[in-house]
Length: 130
Image (tube, rainbow, N blue to C red; front, side, top):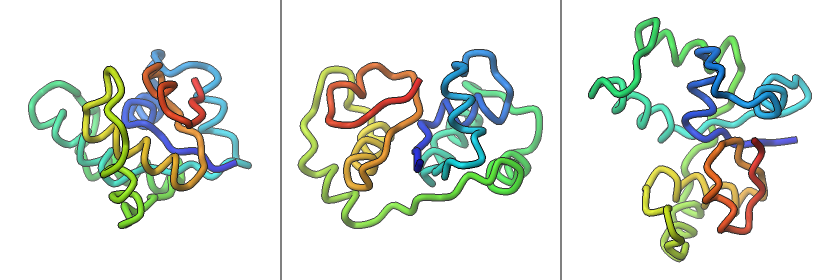
């Protein structure tokens, strides 16, 4: 199964944070699954690290290396079709965040579930794993 990680699921998996649900962790670590990450998630995490909202226990380039090489998260490029979907995506309650809207658009276009705890994703025709 192909799955797309919300930024916090990516972060919590790599950091071993107990906030990651058991189902999410099992899905991410299942070697039969293709786990996708969005480049905007790395950007979002970098922003939050730079403003002190998140703390990593290693330099940011090492964090990225863990994601791509140890955990083997594949990067799902942001394609024009994803941007086109964002352009017509309705604004549902609680989802004006541009990072969330891009993930939702990618999940819709690629027909894949999102691994994340945000219950607001349920306002869209996507599957959420948590």
